[in-house]
Length: 201
Image (tube, rainbow, N blue to C red; front, side, top):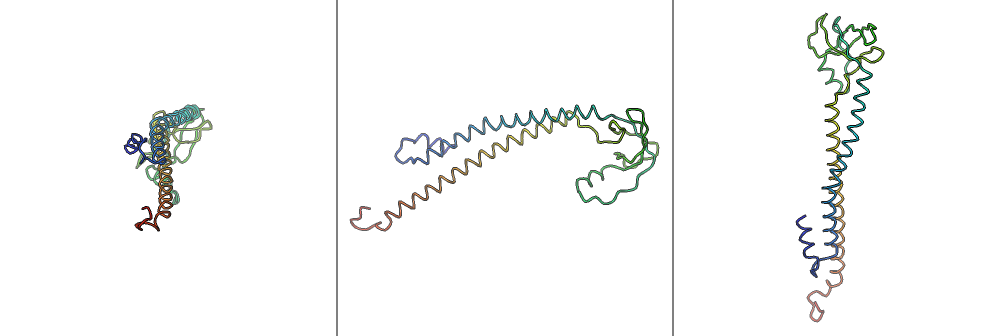
């Protein structure tokens, strides 16, 4: 940016090339886009993501209901899971066979996950069930939805700034290539006569 300001101040100098002015204008445009467009894109993306996630929060809280489950016995260990994310998630929980009464009053028995490391028969813990009384994952909460929306907005803003800077660098690279090409053309014209007496160089 400092170079672009210097070029703009010397724009009337005979040593200032047209490509220098183009580079200065590109730098000004990039700074303007990074300062204005990147935050705007981040805010729009974060707002849209937040609306979508909070809508999902409302729907999940309408469709999922808490229930108290009672441990019957420990469940057998599952077969090896190839997905490392699923493996790490299951490693942090214990599989148990439990009984629970659903939101509609129906009684169910099934294998569920609980956070207790050493569950005993009769232990009570909370689970979430769907309209049919089946065990489902805990619904998304508003704080998590807001955090995800903020991260999405920050990511979108940073990506926009990165794209603008990448475009600026690409334009500067092309201008530099053009300068080298013109320098080669000029040297090709005067190079063979360089230093000769009476050659005008």
